[in-house]
Length: 621
Image (cartoon, rainbow, N blue to C red; front, side):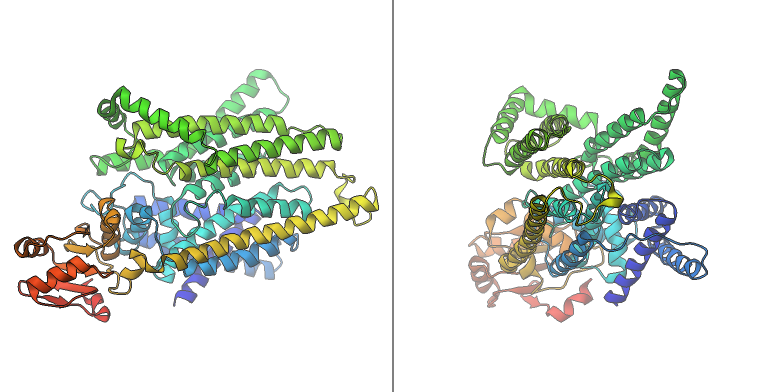
């Protein structure tokens, strides 16, 4: 059934993509645009409390559109021009399938999967509605639901699992990555296309803190912004298409995460600059009115879904973690004080100037690379280029993002997390990846402009300046293709190694003793975890809440030697789960209940623990 469900989901995506081609959407943008259109439709259904119906309607509509496209094509009513298969298509298809297979076999490990990103997908899947005030299992209730809706749509047809969710997010990332090839002037040039493939592979180096086997959206924010920038460039001479593209991408980004406002600002500014550059020659007053009206209209449409979400949050919840609230910011400042602010700022500066920081290394590599490319192309190839100006813009983006990130630590995070700069490299990876893609896309355009033959129709193996430049071009293409494949395989092998390394982790061992529950409940469950740090950071508790679909689970690593205290502690719970052997707990059970227990899932009664067989756990859902 999972295979048929995935085929149904895939056919729907193909249907939206082919229909968007008929609407003159760029072929390399149709996949991600079709995905975002479905997300926005699902969001509309979710807001009117018809999510389950909406999933079937939206997906079925995609399949119907595909059937209509096939029928009309067969009758000769419509036709779509296909450019054919290029080298980068083969690279994307083959390595994308391999990566998806690895992700399908991957478990969820990262803390934030269980504190929110996987939990909200499970909640939407099995309840069919957005969280309400009574649904306390969702702690970050102010987080917008865009990616969760997309993943819920997929797992509705394939069955809920960690692997299915990871593949779903990868489809979204891969579709957005495919958009970068729309910037190529000549897609038959292997060197240029392979440089972009290499960029995709290198971007995962800066995403190494979380990798692709997690549902966190830091990379999603970056790659959606990249696709948004690509669309602004591609549609720069199509005002209506440009406005629709910006509204869709900005609106979706705001529904991915609250912090996406920074990246939406980048798209909005780029949009405004593009409109000014492409203005028609007419009276200056009419130009101002036209640009202002189009800009404000697009901006209004873009932020409307997020405004609806904020209204929903404030009407539904009294308070929420990481919500956008002036009162919350004032309370945070009053709590930490100016001394706390200075300490956080000092730690922040130390991290920025720490040369072992991956984000700092990425910043330096990008600067050195673009400056070197500028010098070689300008003085070696005698071709003026805008790479230094571009670098100034990218460095400005980095500086502003540093400021916004510092503001988040000071105003939004608890002091205990802020002083340690919790998640710094993960947050910074987003802007490093964004700048990497923008820099490389412009560089590839500049490289294309320096080629000997500028007439694309006349380019052939014979149109090189000399046999030496031809041989050099072919060698460079081969080397870039080789490293693009090697770097992508490095990410695939790294994910495989991570999965193997985590085979004894708590989330994996938990699956060996109990099946996940799928009905929301208030059952009190104790998870025994020998790793004290997993208990003190609430990792074990969040994992148990996600796995057993309850908000009354907690973890414990150390147990009292007192028989009375030990018995009273266990009597507070309905069940106890022991994924890993814990000597102190086993000894306590032997003294109190006179049972020998190592691992397993047990119901707690007054006189003894009753083992729940793995096959029986479904009856307690």
